[in-house]
Length: 323
Image (tube, rainbow, N blue to C red):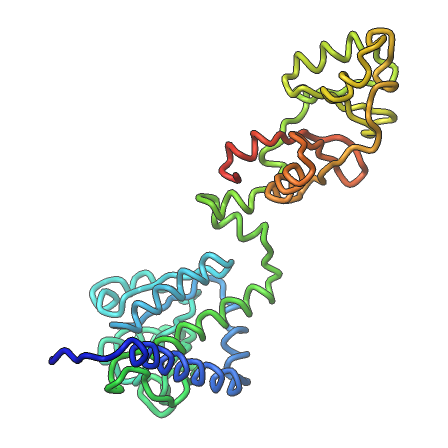
């Protein structure tokens, strides 16, 4: 290997060439989707067990990512390394499962045992390969063909285009299955409870205060009692409830605007009507955006019938990592 001196423009041109070659292969593959791809989706959707993904080398790395994407989007999936499968891990594969085996050439010898195992026990086999007439392609129940496109590396040998198209095919399967199953943001949250993403997908219902913690008063409540409620609950505000529904809110600003004769007034006479609220089932990130944009510190949470079911404070959102 002899280092070469190439200019910055030449370096960027080479990078652009790689992206262009791989993009062309993806576009070609998209245009070749058909009955086999639909059948593969239907087989995976109908399975009672898990999708067992297997491959060797770069195909194995890609297969691991495909399995992870499927598992996190509602399709039970597990990566089984083909070599380990030959040394006991085939016991993980059951007749309830479906096998997704990846090999660009379709002739990877290490895959022979898992392919044979699937045939022996009648386990559906889906292949991702570039050659339909390969050993893997011939044995599979469904073959998803990769485009016969050149690798993007300068010598045409390093897996580049082939791994990109394989990964994209896995993404296409996962997203199609998401759509068929009606997999939504709330479902995604179930599989991603941790970290920043988990916080962003958290619902107001999981952060709000409820029940006895709510600072609620009736319209006829004397302000002397309303102030006690505001102090005791610790939110610096109170919600005005009439007929079981929220009709107003009392904040520090309302107290300052009504200082003259405050104690002689009722809660209904001091409250600001038509307060901003958030619905149960909404994302906490949406509530935080509402509070920030309106420069307020809390939102009452209402159900579908406009009944108060909770109170979300901005500090609750910040503690959950939404800031």
